Amino acid sequence: MKPLSQSVPELTTPRLLLRAFQPTDLADFADLRADPAVMRYIGTGPRTPAQTMEALAGLIVQWAQKGYGVWAVSDRATGRFIGECGFYRATEAGLVELGFSLATTAWGHGLATEAAAACLEWAWSHLDTMAIDAVTHPDNAGSANVLGKLGFVLQRDAEFLGQPVQIWQVRLGGNAETVS
Figure 1 (tube, rainbow, N blue to C red):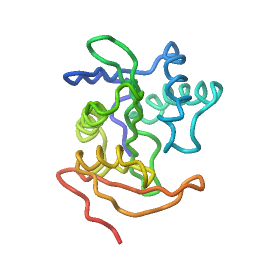
Figure 2: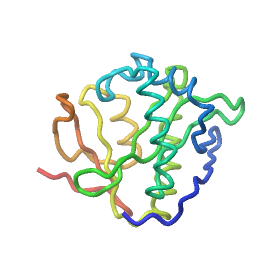
Figure 3: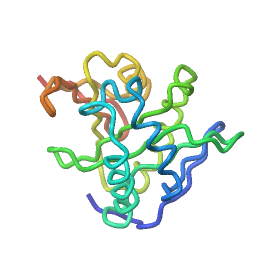
Figure 4: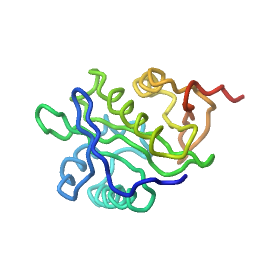
């Protein structure tokens, strides 16, 4: 993956601002990552404050190290932090992984789709990749719905951290073919 920029660009959508994470986001980020509903299908579940602090430091550094990363997502009208969206480590296939998590108060309004679409638009013009992966739990219908709206296609079932997961993929210029 060839990064083209080390600075964190701001992305705007009609309702959202995607911006660089700051150390001052720790309390809001800790609340998000401690919420059992938000973390139900993410890794091993809710995170401790220490785990969240370590994750936040990693998200901040990732942009400088890789040239891509995760944005803090805020409501444009209120400035309120509502979640995270962006690109995590490279997957086994060498592709970046799209991920998102929003506060429960932001669920059901199309905000995850809006944020993820902005991230994908940025990726297609700034990353040297033809495809992007996403991983979700098989029971996470909300995330599967978002991925489907964005053109992702289910590739295969797998296991991660002892949990069943589904690997999804979207290709630049069109849907990926399902791999058997």
